[in-house]
Length: 130
Image (cartoon, rainbow, N blue to C red; front, side):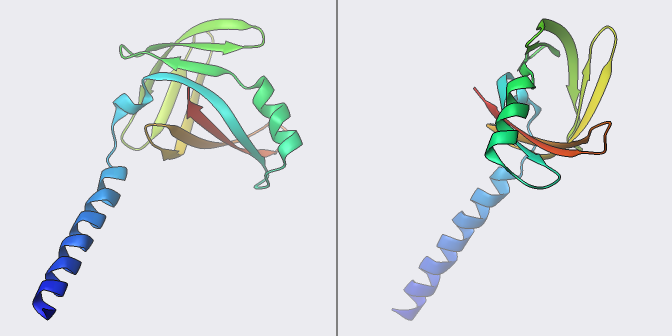
């Protein structure tokens, strides 16, 4: 009976560890689709009102499989090209600008990056897939 219990525990741990490994697998195809900002922390602090203000002005992104995309913000829609490396560095290039973000978290439904504004405000921005 003890051997059976140990065997069941071993099998349970084996499956549990596989699930965690699957979450850490990098797949650039997870970026394909439409994304909207859903949360912003200012200087490491989440406050619902200020987060809502930032979220309202952040763009929505659509990433296409061919490396192109569209950024939509309050001023209109703009085309861009994009790349994402295994080091989780996202580069978005337009005709006039190149933005680079190091993603702190990246899954099939969420990505998170930090950025420093001109006034030294640190923003932690979370995007979720639509």
